[in-house]
Length: 444
Length: 62
Figure 1 (spheres, each protein chain N blue to C red):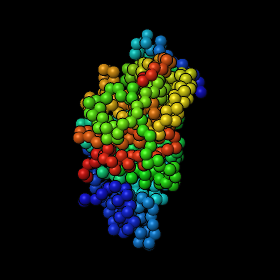
Figure 2: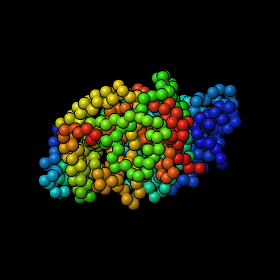
Figure 3: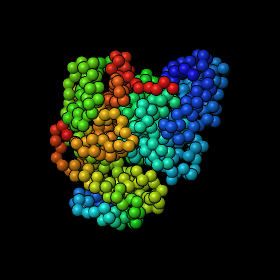
Figure 4: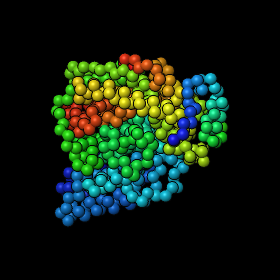
């Protein structure tokens, strides 16, 4: 069926009565069933989805408005509580845990606005990784080249949106887990200002850095869903012509030829923009790494003592090492964050938005799970966050937008001041209208 | 929160996989299973490297 899966399109048609929500759900489930080789979906929630869609259609029949997401199908990373379902956080060891009693707050808000939850989505175990290589649910494949990673840890969410299985998807981002898969799959992904979206009912990883966020097929869909998740559209006035600067130095290293070309085309299209070199980015990335290892390790320490082999090997050994990290190192990392944040505050006195690549290049091949850093091949699972970790470490809002490319998708980070999420979304929409960014979507 | 105090650059730089895993096990009060030894050692060294970077003087552009 040739049905647009843009959230704005579906909601408009369902609210006008020209499209039934149950038909949209039927199409989403058909697409999910046809794309099992992607390993993006961990559970299809057919009964729940049909029930929610029928409720939307009944509201329309009664002349009521189901809300701004009427009949829009979406999925959630498998660390959001879904009432009656087990929250696995991507872990086989939680596969037989007790089901959640309630929906996560974010899902509650989406449901109240007419959204229809159709699936839970694959992830790196406990969100500790950048590739979505999961020992229990498999490796999520990149829809644009199934021999390549989708990125992670919210890889199932990005792949499901890029492949048109759902209109949008929720994910989480601690060190880049939304921005990296959004970049590699060619869709929009937002990591909001830290603490600005509800974390209730979300399986934790690193409380100092964790945020939920979303993936969408267009910037306008990002605006629509972000508004619902906040409880109301963000009232922050959007400056139509923000001052933009390009981050160089650390953020210009190790780029592939394709990324250099795409970035050059983008900056030429944007017109002359100043560049900024930060000091101490290496320390910022290492601090983020250490905070993550410390908090993640402490969270899992008791369970690791009890049954270490019940963990995914890809996360287990990282968590075990982190569980022994000294607290003084953790404190040093937190202290450095304060120093680094002051530097960014000064930069944001001169510029509204900073831009930087989300990743070094296109998605790594699954049979070569490495990235080149300073001439050395290093693990993609641990190192794809080279450009994302120093930014989210500060709690800043960031959108990964898909650059225009002829080849595999490449993403660019739009980095804003805290609380200026709406300005970033407006900028992403403006860049899309100018043709400087464009999502890479599969015809489902 | 206790300070377990393992991961310091001099600890990991001088030790082999078995020694690092043994020390991790001692600090956690468990025996590190054989399949975990190489990964635990590699990740301990990685954290030690990051701690060393954090403690270095920041450089412009880096």
